[in-house]
Image (tube, rainbow, N blue to C red; front, side):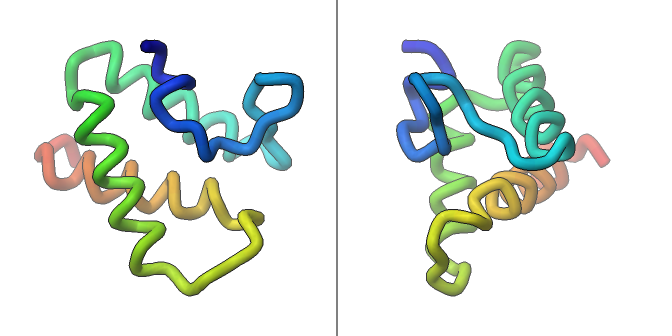
Length: 82
């Protein structure tokens, strides 16, 4: 399973991720890169992202990458990389 397949809630168009702002693409790429370097597993990532979404106020999906970035920041901090 690819990282993209592991997180089905990523906003997509024709099966590819959709980014509204450049920072969203960079946050996505950082998470993929850190996973590829063995910093965390996709199950760890999915749990971190799920925690962020669970505590966030309900939204229409337009804040997805804000949750993504928060999850990345928290996971990197927990791993002692900051």
